[in-house]
Image (tube, rainbow, N blue to C red; front, side):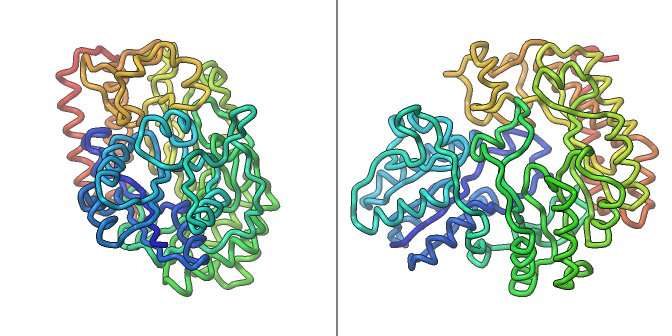
Length: 478
């Protein structure tokens, strides 16, 4: 069969305004794994990352026609659903009998609705590898399957995967145009960067996170297998930069030390650069020192808020003192830190939000990101508050943590701060954080700045625009 796997685009400019220009495509590891599965079974596989290459739906449809695609698999996240709906309609309007299957988080959550509403043939709910393999076998037998893989017909819940992660094939990165996957400008590494995965699932259950909707069970890969994958990519594709795509890494200190040990055994510790996301409670100074020796460049932390009461309401467990301790470790070791903060928790006040901005200033990470608390469909936060939302009137593009609603726009809204207050706070957070003399001098004069001069000038122009906007907003924030 001829198989096309698609990572659809999303209206990033509409979602995030001027910040869309600083967004970089992240390599879709899930699609790379499915592509490998299909190719290993003898199928001809094409991958299209529409988010990266900006092809139109007409151009994708043309590929379907010209390549006589038998099966198209589309990855579905909520912000991209406008594009997905447009595309499937165009494909079904062709003379081909292309089987259309949807997967990923949005397709999993709304499987029963989508199979009725859209002209599609099947949906793969939950983790995709086994069910995609089964679908390929079904279509080869010329069975006209229409339905949902991965849903328990008795309790109507997603069936947890029991597949052995160590038996997954190597991702088919050779089918991708890797030039699109250069590290985002805010990351202190340069060049093509690919994703690797050491585990699935997360031991924490934050109410706003969709991580465990696909992978509710924690499963780990053998670190030797992980490093062998990195070694293969390094030697065969020439890629030296890697991002660990786990929700949290490492899950234990021993996992971290094993990772470093295998990197050294393969002589990769001096050859590659990598980054990860973790919680401060899961690392210590000695492990961070070992990570630094083995090429770690920076760590992302979900600090989120300065207010324990808001963190408790979303089941986010944070030790603020430990956060300061670990960030100080990183400064001593010259490992960059990237702090993630959120504004707009339910019933949050202006004073609460400003305390979060002040926390970010005190932690003083090299890079900080401020986003809107977003109740993504399927999360516990969404289920708790969805009765407040005019769901039938909310476009998919609104489910994005950088979306900035216009005044009077109909959208979802958590109780507490207004959308305009949140917009103003997010702008103020960026201005206060990046226009500090300390931050400006750090990035201009430090030899290992996280940003190039061009990026600094572009970022400065964005902040200037935000500053002008602030002068005209009616929300009063002191």
